[in-house]
Image 1 (cartoon, rainbow, N blue to C red):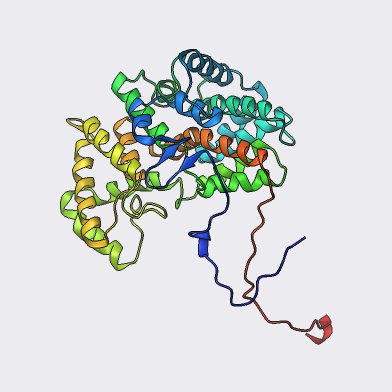
Image 2: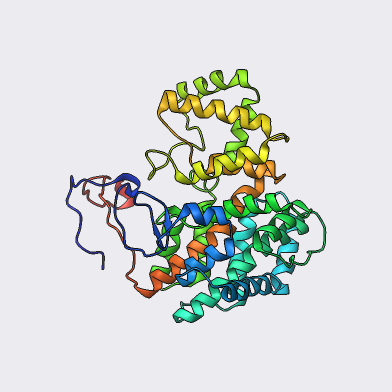
Length: 381
């Protein structure tokens, strides 16, 4: 059933801006970003991705015993990817090593669903267990892809918290405690953000009765776009293009004149600034102090000042996150895949919530094409 047609001339919200499309108990953006009622500030300061992922999936922060048991389940999942998936990814890596890691993750998750025979959503407990497996498997897939593209055998998953383990797998070195802490903070800040494009895509897919893996594949596809997750990669490209302080003003003037977006600034929801960018910005400056990222921080500060003065725009999370990842020695092409690893917690929580109180997501549209016209046979066209 298509529902009632929308009358001609009815107002609509382009991009669904400002439209309330549902209810959620997972995340609130009302005045302060909160996960399950907890303000993002203390969660980000603690920097424990396992605690936040547990919170999003289970509804409460874990006890010490629950934390250790949950972290252990994630590590088991990371080490238990079916060999058939690794073999298929090895073939793909040999054939197209230049492929986007986002495409590799999207394909890998799809293969995991095939191996698991994921057809339709199961009961709540089964969905939570499935989500926990994916939380461990997806970062391991990312590490495996980089090994395979480099022609190396896939290394075992490090026996340590997820932030440190992933950073070690992507850089090839054991991170310092400070590096692991700030990387964990980025994972916490990226973990969840209400009905954003990728989360809404995942909820739409499972609202049809489809499976969790299909919802995650759709979410990864949405996050790949430069107006969503891909923005963090473009931030560093912009700063590299500016290059020096004397180029800041002319570079921005060129962007303004061409009416081009400056990635890393502005947000559909946060009109007075992104609290996540504020939290991470200070940590970013501390990390870069005295290191190779210090010059970029000087450029970034100049860009921020001019963007606020000229456009009234403040940074969003992608602006400091890109600089943190650069300072940690991570290649640009992993910036958005790291976003995937983090947002798996939010996506799976939303999928479980959607399945638990489901109605198929089916909005209406306003037709703006040709008026009614008669069909004519081919010989008279």
